[in-house]
Image: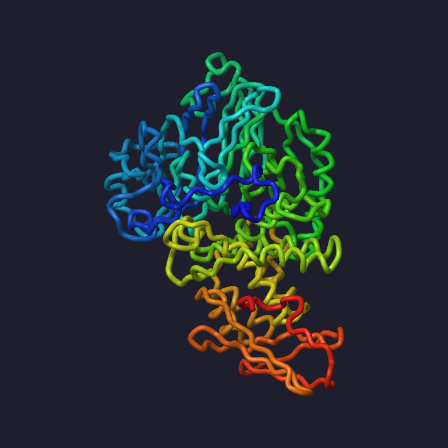
Length: 574
């Protein structure tokens, strides 16, 4: 998700301020009820007809799942603005496509389906089909406060998008809205009036003219003027990453050879009015693909595509179909490097959100901190080393330190995004997360750090060759710590404890006494912090180890001394 704190932006109109948490009606990541914990989703088949004139949808979801724990009832999530017309149950052993009517109740955002689990045994597969319709929630402030976006292109054509990370995919389709349960694959069918085009996740299988994907028996005459786009996602996908992008798009596309040696299409769905600008952006997209593959390993969804869709909202990391609404501004947050930084941030999420997904929102920083840090790493390589430090400095002043970046207890999206309980915008999962990685790089040194970073993306190098989705995984902060320790042989428990599990920053005391520089770390609750410090002596940088939180450096009397001049380690400001 794009940055959100307006004080950071030079172009405020590009990024309006977040609403307060108290104003958000919904949030993703509620405590998991036993009626959702009892099953593991294997596949969704989503079919939806989108009517731009009525701002309404008609939909059907067929879910295939595996039974894992006892429960009589089963629950799916769906916003109450939409009306459930029917629910069907596919019992183990039933014929393909055979659903028996099921008793259900839809209220308070839940579809509670009665007694379908009564006779199910562990590891049995079953299915549910939900038919629904209505007017979905219109996004008040997309992408942060989400839903459907209904607008028009400069020429007056319908321009529609979905964005629902904060509130959850259940704003517009029935789903198990929990971050730690992704289907292994998914089919997405979308019917729209001609001449609109649908850009969605996965790979486009076919376009059917005069067809309605939600009709029980599609009839060409009844569906005249409508067309259906059928997309197939061949890898696991997080629910909030499922997206519709609808407009009279044109496409710019190219086959790309990955660092893994295989090829896949890169495609940009662009408004007709912006094709010329789109061609310039497309070259930047290709360059960014090369840069991030070199950093983190192969693009994870090569079996489908890499897609970007021009959207009426700022942006989102929808898997294999990144939402781009930066209006070709380059960097709306600061220095213009000739790089579209909004695209870069969302693109980094293909590794840090879509390949590596937080198991619960309390580890949200794995998505946003890594994506934010990617911006600094990329400009360092694409432009100059000093650009890296300028990018880090631009983020530094907006760290709030109000709550732990990675609390051990489970949290919702809103709790983690805002960073405290009063609803004030936070941002530490972005900025502080990036600075934690910056500090870890200083601690480990470049070669061990970048080796560990690649293993965080792909713990087993053999996974870099896979295109079947088996490289996708859920991750936690503790797992990332374990990967760092395995790759480097360093105990970094103290580092993770201080920076991620509590909010306060360490302080650094320094003094020059004769021919000695003395350094001392002061930490909250006297937590251990053996962090080295960079000291520049007469212009020459030196690394001073502080094994017990203290360090000394012998210098020539009268030498010019600068302590931590490039801010290598995140610490409280002097």
